[in-house]
Amino acid sequence: MMKTYLRLTAKTDCFGRGHVPGHYGCLDRLQAENRLNMFGLFSDATGCAYIIEVNSLEEASENRSFGSAC
Image (cartoon, rainbow, N blue to C red; front, side, top):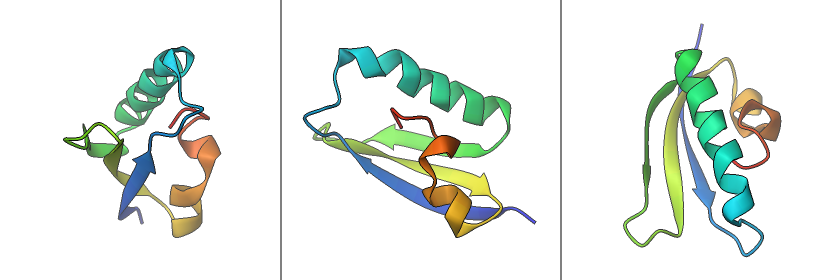
C-alpha cells in the first residue's frame, strides 16, 4: 500500500542551471508513475515541496527516487 509523504528540498549553491532539465525530468517521471500528488516552489524561491506516493519512508528519502537534481 502506498503512503503519502511531504518531501522538502532546499536550493543550494551547487544547484545551477545545468540541473534544471534533470529536475523537471524527475517531476515528469513521478507524474507519469502517478506518484506525484502536488509540488510547488517556496515563495522566496529557496526550495520546493513535493507531496508524493511511495511504499515507505526509506523510498521517500532516497535520492534515486527523485534523481540527483530533486
